[in-house]
Length: 145
Image (cartoon, rainbow, N blue to C red; front, top):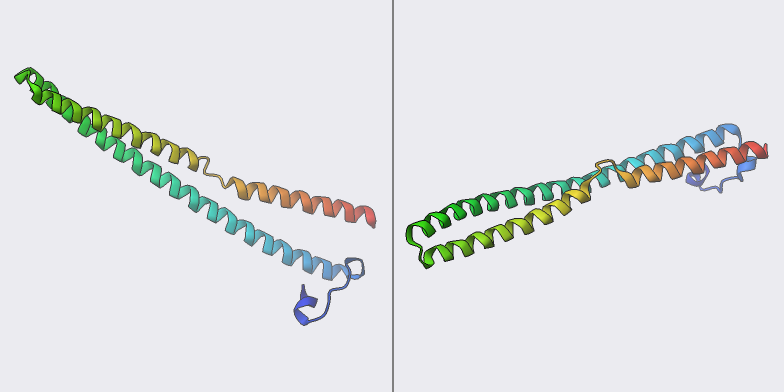
């Protein structure tokens, strides 16, 4: 790394000193940790967006269900008071509101499911793969010496 920045080509790993190898490993580990943190941050932001959208849709579904309940009460009152077509109109509005509430709740549920679990799984898998690769390389290097 340092040799490449100076304009020279890096020597083969077998010819590098221990200090050079440690410096390279430190730089690479630092860059790896920064990259993994950026990946985890991006994944959490995406999951947070889904959770927020899902919660908003659940709330909208709840409000529409409350309106539906109010309309149902009005429908019952009108049906009992008049027993005429006015209650039929109110019943149609009630059914429409409940159907809309159910659709919003189902969409909201799907959004919340996409946000769970809140652990950045892709970043965690990437870290595991990186650790396995590094461990394998260290074991192979130890056998070669």
